[in-house]
Length: 258
Ligand SMILES: Nc1ncnc2c1ncn2[C@@H]1O[C@H](COP(=O)(O)OP(=O)(O)O)[C@@H](O)[C@H]1O
Ligand SMILES: [Mg+2]
Image 1: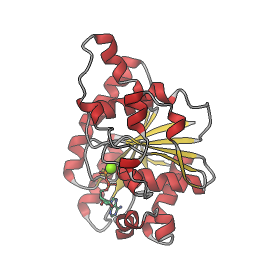
Image 2 (image 1 turned 180 degrees about the vertical axis):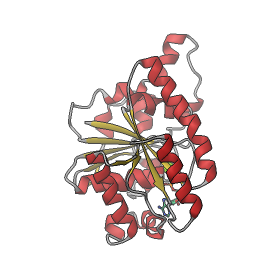
Image 3 (image 1 turned 30 degrees about the horizontal axis):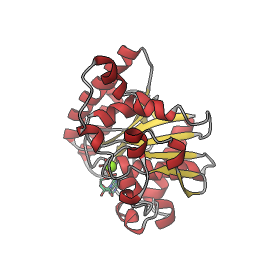
């Protein structure tokens, strides 16, 4: 079982788009996939017309100690979802116990909840992270062994990245845990020189960690959630569908650039 956080503290870089379409691509390849929404905005659920406000979800697991198995919904063949739930944001704001032991435990709530899942029940778990670096993101970092980091082809994208890598590296050192990081360039516009530069810079900073496939800018990817469809249902012959199909193979076969 591979447990992967789709993470970047920057918003609008394609985390949710990647979680949903990469997950469906993997499911179509015959993998059993669970998607988990750790963003209180609940966008992942909306993409499957699951209304996060009326659904049991991660909020009840993390706030009320509900069994994780009870909040899993099957949304497609081989594809399962845990919605965020209406109260997930309360995790960040509720008063915390001040002793150090219970504080450090706060970061392990997702890890603890997930350890109740039967081993190897799923081939992949993909966690859609919030665009922030608070307690929810910390829970995702501590529960996952791999990170897929979507990066857009603009200059500011690289600035935020170094902070994210610092946080993850620091946690790795403290926990003596080794994680795998994958970068994927999203909203890629080949004809833009800047986008090409950012991509090669990324490869030089992170050799063998940038996926071969870049996700091109494709309007169908932005439209499909409005129809509660993944790209494979909405426009299976679009560039977006082709790119996410290839990205799934990158992930399955470790195809990276160096
Ligand atoms: N490759 C792409 N081409 C066109 N639009 C995209 C692409 N990837 C994401 N988008 C759009 O960009 C916006 C932000 O994407 P989203 O996945 O919600 O980012 P995040 O989850 O990181 O905040 C959404 O409107 C989405 O539909
Ligand atoms: Mg999102």
